[in-house]
Length: 124
Image (cartoon, rainbow, N blue to C red; front, side, top):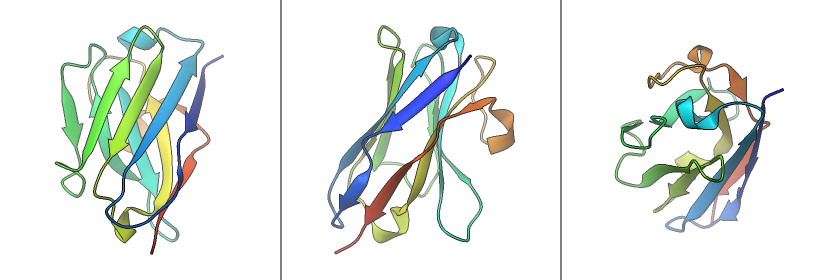
């Protein structure tokens, strides 16, 4: 059984940073593309970032590019999302997701496994 567990969310002030972690188990992590998505109240779940199995290819939503960095440690079966210069509009539940394949995708319905989500609130 595949499990993804996110951690690292919280309440921060605008301009601050957070690092989210997603620990995985039960599948071949090193051959799976991984993604981060977020969902704000009353809004659709949206793509944030994705990373290839080796970590050599990454892609970001335009709203977070240059502020967020996705990375992975295949020895720890963990993917990370470093979020800098946070803005109130980044407030959302952040979800980690895994695909049955190596190619990056941007649609939430192209991911097969999901974590439970972690709340990120950016407010002064």
